[in-house]
Image 1: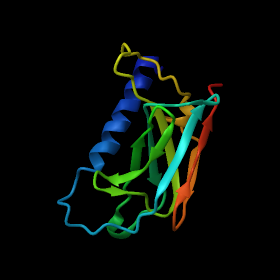
Image 2: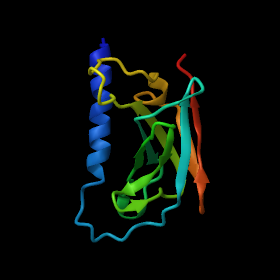
Image 3: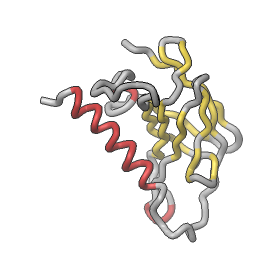
Length: 143
């Protein structure tokens, strides 16, 4: 049986692994074609600030690479994806999307994720990134 604490901790493990995957490599690999991805995330119609959004490509790229792009939303819920700290964007194609709320600086840590699992550890979200600029908004519902 999975507890709320272990569910919440698994989200942080996922976040760490995805974030760490962007740090691997010697930096000599050429960047793939990247396309601008921006948008706004809301929860029940309200901007969702300080949330992590991750776009994980469904298809494996050259040399069996499948690297995610991610962002942290601003207070107004807006985000801009980054492939790595120096390159904005995401690869083209279909992506699985995960969104989870990070604790605010002034919040006590909690064992409960404020965003339903269907948007993170059991995500149902997908997005298609195409050539050019992409605006991809998400209006999440708490129930």
